[in-house]
Length: 164
Image 1 (tube, rainbow, N blue to C red):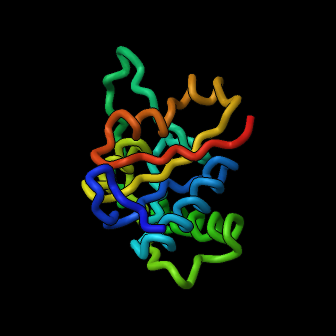
Image 2: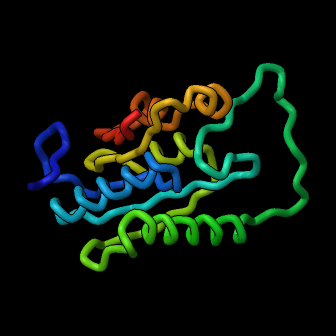
């Protein structure tokens, strides 16, 4: 089976948002299957940022909270390294290891997960994200990455859910 975008062309890449929730694990498995079936490279993305929740989600910008936090020097190397480690651990949990038969790139950019994923995934790609049912409180607090991606991505978005 070849994965094709809505224009009928073979997808250039499969981009997947990685987190260690059940929905994230299922999304990673689906993304690996899509990449394997289409022969496309897989880009596993785990964003990081000061104040981001560990298990994904989006940062809400509160009305009236326009102040900037002061950080004298911060290059993010430690956070990027930790994010890459979490991606490898998630591959271990979801697949047993990083699949040797798929060209995998791990990307750990800084920023809000929805925004980062829609910036990384471009025309010709397929974006895969997970979602969890019965997470209404989490979505109220952190927002929905999958909804943001569906509304802002420039490529097809596959939202993989868990039974709920």
